[in-house]
Image 1 (cartoon, one colour):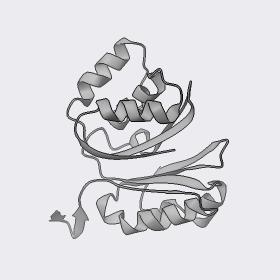
Image 2 (tube, rainbow, N blue to C red; image 1 turned 135 degrees about the vertical axis):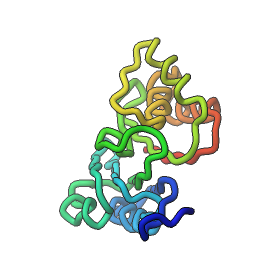
Image 3 (tube, rainbow, N blue to C red; image 1 turned 30 degrees about the vertical axis):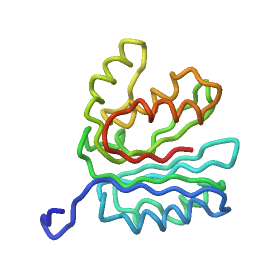
Length: 173
């Protein structure tokens, strides 16, 4: 961990919770605990069992994930992310979690870690028609899940993560 300009800088932080009526609020509190791992941006995606609700922005958790924002992130499941860019640009398009509606339903993913073959995977996905909205390597995981023929989302996630090389951690809903 480097100390630069009186601020700690590490990698990203992620947090997730399932089965609690205040999942977004608890996710915000969990993100506070890992704020030191990413201070550029943050976001939360929640699920009410039918729809995903998302908010992402640049800035610190206290400034971004306000009480007003959390009221709109309804549901009993949520995942969140604090960003410290090690790959991709530092723009709002890069802020996680990322979400998509696909053959498996609505899926959201956030990730921290190193995917050494993400560029090659991105090119492969683009050649098969995938359209990326960011430069983040996390999006390769999401596109992989969306394009994997599987009986359901859980099986698609398992397959993509088993086939993904690197040292990483993900959370998804």
